[in-house]
Length: 238
Ligand code: APR
Image (tube, rainbow, N blue to C red; front, top):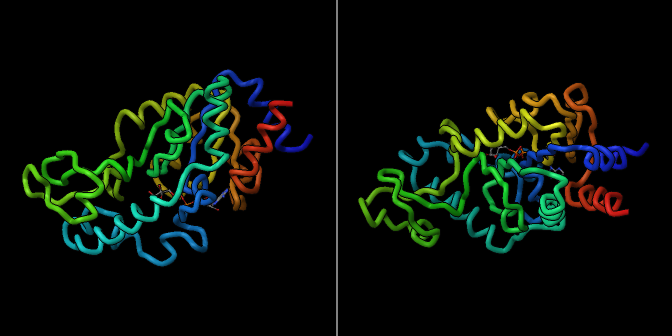
């Protein structure tokens, strides 16, 4: 049986399917990922921008990097693969989506049960007092209106703890799942890369690059997230 037919069958049979996504889920929306050949970390050392040290000691570079990402997102939107996952939630084929992505595309496409494990780039707040602020305030480099502190996007920087509720919900769902689809992530970043091994259910890896994952997954489907999700949906609807 073809791999995507096998996956469609598992989806139909499953009672508790959970999806875990990474940046590869958004590249076909025009958002670069991090570790592919044209990913963010190919040109920028994450240690210089994506941690609280950069935020405290090199705010200009930190600010420039995240403003560029916010600006770049303005021209991007969810693609057919995101809408397929939202449709699958509505049809009861998947229970929830846990994502490392901070672009908000899963919710924008209509998924409601979404755990943003690395936060949201759109949720700007003050680093000092935690007061919420707007993307505009951040990109205009305005100080916090409450305390004058530095503003930052609400994403999890390297070394920061993950949002507790999102983590606990995703962990519990994956532990109870009978099927986990891991889509568009290199699984290089702790602790999210530990989630797939927390399930006793079937594990599926959908990714453009798949070498090195053979022994960890029950099914490996190489290719484009957007195309494969749509192909699986066609089989499900047949
Ligand atoms: N379809 C399928 N897979 C894709 C596609 C696509 N259209 N585009 C890229 N990929 C794959 C790449 O081959 C790569 O293996 O998606 C994976 C993306 O991996 P990363 O760039 O490492 O992104 P991710 O795993 O989400 O990174 C995790 O690292 O920098 C931190 O906080 C950041 O959340 C991010 C975390």
